[in-house]
Image (cartoon, rainbow, N blue to C red; front, side, top):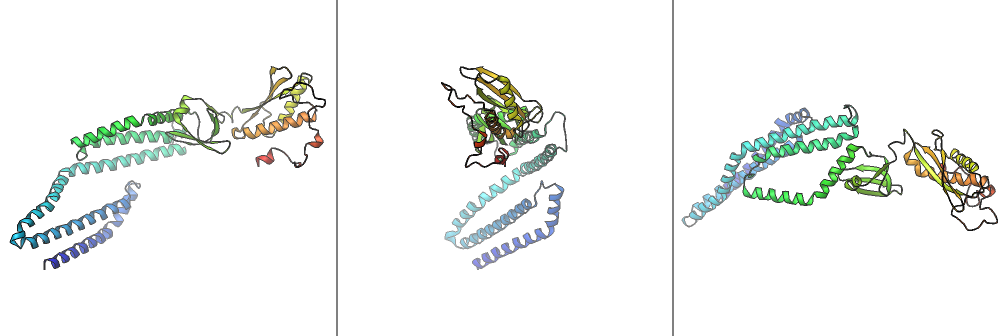
Length: 393
């Protein structure tokens, strides 16, 4: 009879909890969905339903446990030789629940405070995120505040708000005043302080790089001896895609301690200089060399006529004079292609006018000038087509 009663009580508990779940879903579904909309999705409906399901499951478990303990106590208490064991068993099972219940009642006000604090902090962070999102999109502008600073500044403000919330919540955490909790907190603090020195250095360097406006996403830069495009800027590292399509990760502390060349920052305003050096013999007039170099610039698509290109004269060597042609472009990402096209144009122009390029140096004049006749410019397997643009495509 006792086992039958236990089975009936368990079945009744399961049926009641299921009915309770259906009733809650029917009565509260629209209200919970409205609460999610009114809170701007700060309070999620699925999380509320998960909490309700967990509460109903806990009630079911407690009901089944209580029915089982009651039935077991009734069965064992019916015999004199097991009555003492039944009392001890009941005390062993009920006492932890009693202690937990008393502790829960004692900590309930603190738990309510922690829940309210978490909701307030979440709401504040949501508002801060909406504000900085508007700044990043340009809908909200502030004097002397760049749009690319929006998300780094949001992360800093978020850390400050969360840190303040943790400080406020610490005294209300259950067990925070115990020696074990204090020991664990001390151990975690020591581990973090010993293991995060380089991480903190990279984090500070990342913030300084951001607010100094050293570069931004998409810029063509040279960091140390690595040249590439900035693809990602994180708090700890910066990612570059090199000219050979390689992904390079550089720690922000290394960037801060080194030098950065930004090719894109002034490309649109003042232009970048593409240059190339050639060595020409003393028997060739410098005016002719300068004119040919300017012709080579004019034949290179992408190089600007204004500002005007210019020629610099370098070393007067043992066998040749060093000339450097300098021309402007306004596309930092095309510098490599333009430099290659300029080299081709220089070779074509000097071959046309029969002027021999003397670099590398040689020991004696050759019997025949080292030039390529125009008739042989497209010797097999080369085809007659415009250079430079075809490669770029």
